[in-house]
Structure formats: C-alpha cells, structure tokens
Image (cartoon, protein in one colour):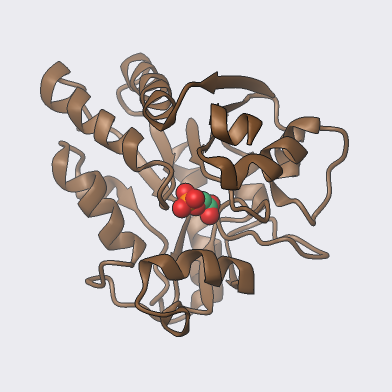
Length: 241
Ligand code: PGA
C-alpha cells in the first residue's frame, strides 16, 4: 500500500485528479470505478477544470459506480445517479451510454447484481478504482460484518452509516435502509485503486488501515492490504487526527 499525505482537502483532490488524468491520457478508453460521498467531490471539480481548461477528453472513458440506494428516485438529489450527473457527468464530455451506476430499481435485483459484475468484466475490467472510506471501515457499502460479499449485492446499511449519511437528508428516518453495492471481490479486481480520506473523523480508521497487520471482515477496507496496487491519499487531519 502506497501512502501519500497532502496538506489538506484541496491537496488530496488535486493529487487524485492528477492520477486520473494520467490514467486517461495513457489510455483514452480507460474504465474508471467511481465513488460518491463528500470525499471525491473536490477531485471531480478538478477533473471538470482539467476538461474545460486543459482539454482532458472523456469521450471514450467508461465508468462504473460503486453503489446506489434502494428505494430512492433517481431524480432525488440524494440518489447517486443524481450525484454523479450533478458533480461530474453533466460537466464533462463523457458519453452517458458509457456511464453505469447500479440500478437499485431493477426488477430482479439478484440477477441484476450478477449482470453488473459480468458487464464490468465484459468491458475489460476496471483500470482505476476511486474509493472513499467510512468511519467504520466500509468501502462502498460493504459494511463490517462476519462475512463480506464477493460480488455486487444487496445489503442492509448499518446504523452508523445511516447516521453518517443522514447529514444529506432531512432526518435519519429518510435515509434508505438498503443499498446495492459492488462487492469486495468486484473492487479487488480493479487493476489500480486509490483510496481517499479527509478530516479528523477518518483518522482512527486510517490509522487502523495503515497499521496493515491484519485483515478482518470487521474492517472491510483491510481487504485492500491484499491488493498489489493501492494508493492511499489522505490529508494531514486524516493522517494525524
Ligand atoms: P464520505 O463517505 O466521502 O462522505 O466521507 C465515504 C464513505 O462512506 O465511503
């Protein structure tokens, strides 16, 4: 696991965007794995700037998102479909037919989950996966548990995640209780992974991850210790607390 510590949120955003840019410039048809949440917003802003000012070309890029709530309308500002359009897709020249966000409204969800993993494989696999990390160590919506899913699956959100995400909703009661998420195995198949974290709240979990001695399903992010190409990009607050 490679570690990069930047001064602040702006620093991690620019660093991560720089790596994404390099990846796209080395392969115009790059397959990106994208994340939602507060952490990648600054990176997306920087990618939009790179597109507008430096001509970074997304026209052949393909993207797969990690997760989506179940039981939420895609026009709802808190859906991840909406988030991706609002924070990235609407501002760059990506072909919307090449963007994939899990469909929590699919009729046969179990079958849909299988097809999502198959589609990633069929397109050639994710070249660069962007990840945030939950305060409880989750990656995507793979929550700490006795067992973790390998492939894309339906999961129940933990109380801690519902509480953390309630900041985006009017009340915790409005946060969906279920989600569809790429599994640990789907994530581990990515050729390269960047995990980003910012702020004091993440310091405890980042410390645990960087200790790097043990993997446990109670800290889903620890599975990344088994991956050959992970870069952890954190700001000083997430590093030192
Ligand atoms: P955040 O979420 O970027 O909003 O902190 C990260 C996560 O829960 O994976």
